[in-house]
Amino acid sequence: MAVPYAKLTDTPPSSTGYGQAPPYPTYATGQPNYPHPQGQPQYPGYPPQGGAPQGYPPQGGVPQGYPPQGGAPLGYPPQGGAAGQGYPPTDGGNVQAVDNPTWEGEVPDDDVEDNPNVQAPQPTAPPAEKMDQVSGYDNMQGAPLPPPSYNEAMMQSSYPEQSEVTPNMPTITEDQARDALLQHVSENCCYGAKAARELSFSNIMPSNAFHYILDTFTEKRSTKWAQEPYHGQPIDGPYNGPAPGPWQIEARQPPPFTAQVTHVEVPHTASVKPCHDCLGLGRKRCYHCYGRGRTRCTHCHGRGHHTHYHEGRHERRQCHFCHGWGRKRCFLCHGHGHVVCRTCNGRCQLKCFIRLTIEWIVHHDDHIVERTALPDTLIRGVSGETVFNQQHPRVMPITHFPDNNINQASHTLIQRHNTAYAMERILMQRHSVRVIPVTNLHCNWKSESFSYFVYGFEHRVHAPDYPQQCCCGCSIL
Image 1 (cartoon, helix red, strand yellow):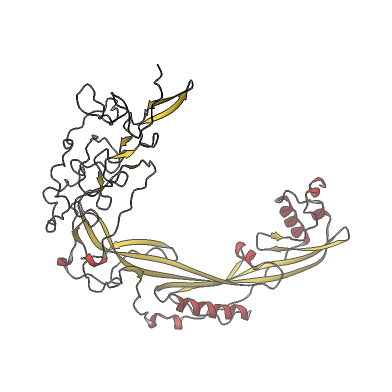
Image 2: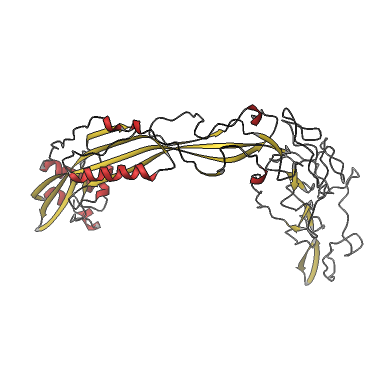
């Protein structure tokens, strides 16, 4: 039977009318459940409803003193196990839901809107002023550290100069040039092949392109404070001796000219400190419900009911999502009002240490000498003949190459590399010169003149003026 229209209010319906909100529904067990538990099991080990879990540090205070190096202090969550009684687990799991939140800190006056897409806050780093002072580690912002001065005795001034000779590159024949153009046409669906088959060559102009390449392999080091949850792992602190300098720490170097990044804990810089994010409690106010343990129902906007128009009358129906209460238990903290601290993972303490970041970097530079209309960038993608190749801790500029442009490019690039990376240590350098054959072919087809290029040992083709590029050429085969 339909309920007659009544004045709308902001409070959910009760058994006696539309006044005060009803209590949580009660089921056969006689215990309040909110909302319907659907046979939800009771999990042992959680605190009684309405009370704070046993074993927590007092609210609003920081535990006195630092924990012993070998283990956690009494009252802290057990090492290697769960985060402690009354703590919701960090990654879901089965948690006994409660109706009375145990969070005793600051909470908003009203329920907040339920947001299923809420993002968890990221772990934070301890304030810099709370970190220990370590000799030799004043720059802790992750900036590159100046390397030790390079030993000038390692300069390869005594290395013998290699002879650089330009080889006689083979020239292509007309048949090879035609086959290369036909292959290029077949790779373009709208190109017609008739022009490539019927063209006649008027001039073949071979030339060489030179590609100078310089690689510098460097090492860069930087330091920064880092932290991780403390769960009883060994602590290498200052009592073991002074910390070595950032460039005195040995690290396994990758093969030359291989980019890589590695992280190393600086010896004798570790210590254990109470978590700055949760003040050593191991838990924080829930970032979804802000400690209230419940959120406003988004389906009824906190009213507990919906109004429907049926058979000429307005009917008020109870919201099925919140069962007329207008709010729901927080799905994130399960009504507790607090969640595990993400910074210390509920361990209450952090292991703080200096982290050394080592980067091996390959700096690449090149210069192309090509005197035809062929775009220089195409030279990088084809093979040629290497006529000069040298690798040393420091290379010297080329001085005897037949093309003086290569000599000038070598001098400029080497000088740039030796000065541009002052905050990195140069480990190795190498440079080489490649010779790439380039042929410019002038052709005629049906009283029309055009030209194209064949370059590299692969006989790649660059033909921007090919006469049969439109789709109509597809039918002329």
